[in-house]
Amino acid sequence: MKSILAIYPGSFDPVTNGHLDLIERGTKMFDRLVVAVLQNLEKDPLFSVSERVAMLREATRPWPNVEVDIFDGLLVEYARRKKAQVILRGIRAISDYEYELQMALMNRKLEPGIETVFMMPAQAYSYLSSRLVKEIARLGGAVEGLVPTAVAERLKIKIS
Ligand code: PNS
Image 1: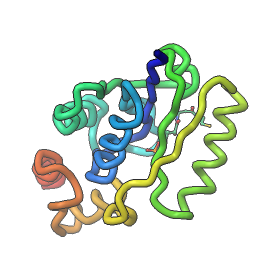
Image 2 (image 1 turned 135 degrees about the vertical axis):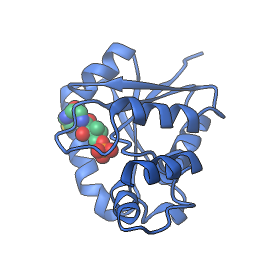
Image 3 (image 1 turned 180 degrees about the horizontal axis):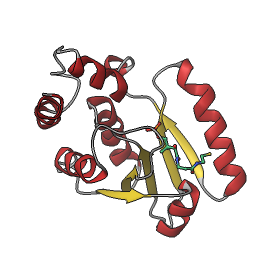
Image 4 (image 1 turned 90 degrees about the vertical axis):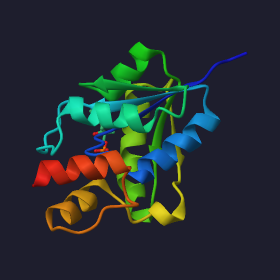
């Protein structure tokens, strides 16, 4: 039987409950899921790659078919090296769609053998983003319920 490996790429600066919702859905759909953290961010990340990976590893411990990895360079090259068949991306709202469609089609042009699959997180997370979580934390707001407890604690320490 064919075993499907999906890559779920992103910045994860930091991982939110919306990402985890999507990861959980992905674990049910694919045999293996690699959460791949982009190393070379043009934007200045709040957390280092190793901090982001540590938070993801802790948060994804309940799912034995999830692996957390780091990638750099072209996503399709990384997916090819991993022998992945699928790139998984989340779409929260129509506003995500245009950018995601452009990326998916460009990735298909670069590597026609890899399919992008879009999944929707629970509606409760449709307004959630790492960017807003960081902004709320910086301004002293409560991030509980938006990110795992360990991430909320790290945010407090990072920002204080
Ligand atoms: O969490 P993000 O920031 O929305 O994730 C964006 C990501 C990492 C998926 C995207 O920037 C990416 O794939 N970068 C790797 C470089 C690449 O392959 N660029 C061409 C995309 S068509």
